[in-house]
Structure formats: C-alpha cells, structure tokens
Image (cartoon, rainbow, N blue to C red; front, top):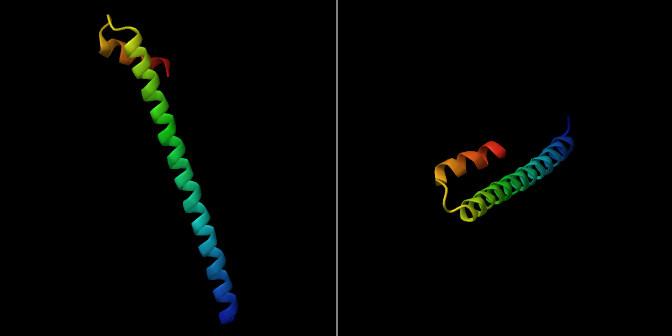
Length: 65
C-alpha cells in the first residue's frame, strides 16, 4: 500500500470511530432519560399513596416495570 492509501484508510477509520462515539453518547443520553422517567413515575406513585409503606410501594413499582 502506498502512503496515500494508508492515510485514506486511517481517515476513514477515524471518521468511523467518531460516528461510533456519537452513537454511544446518544445511547447514554437515551438510557439516562429512561431512568429519569422511571424515577419520576415511582415518585408520582409514592406521592399518590402517602398512607402506605413506601418500601412496599417501591417494590410494587419495580415489579410492575
């Protein structure tokens, strides 16, 4: 392989790496949003039934999800 071919191969693999990094950061953001959504829904259930034991409610929420 000539130097030009080596350089083009390096540049294309570098772009691929950057795209994979971007994709993994999007996946991370997506997972964080899901976790926040689950926590807020658990919090809503805990607020809506204040007379019950909160640990039992929490276990019940986790079982439903």
